[in-house]
Image (cartoon, rainbow, N blue to C red; front, side):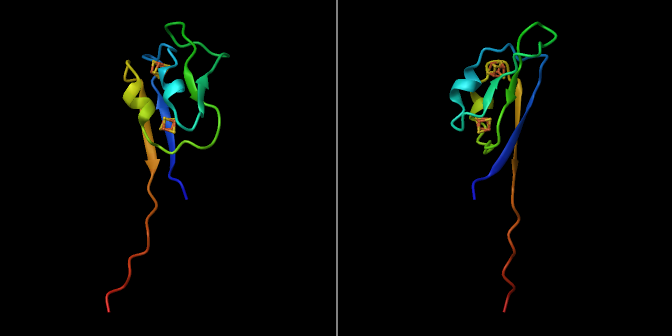
Length: 81
Ligand code: SF4
Ligand code: SF4
């Protein structure tokens, strides 16, 4: 099962350049054309399920506007004999 992730967008810094949209291997990012940031840009958003928390978007963002979270599943530990 692929890892599950999600992002937080700091809308004070996002300038809607779409570098992250183009870099996302899951193609789950897009600009929210219904909203504007305080600086007047359309902010990026997740528009679908499927984020894996790979953090490529955060690496390419020139404004450091993205924080990525990744869910880690705990696995049962085998009991010692
Ligand atoms: S790369 Fe950064 S500044 Fe550009 S749209 Fe994505 S979050 Fe916003
Ligand atoms: S963490 Fe990876 S999969 Fe999730 S939005 Fe960013 S680039 Fe796409």
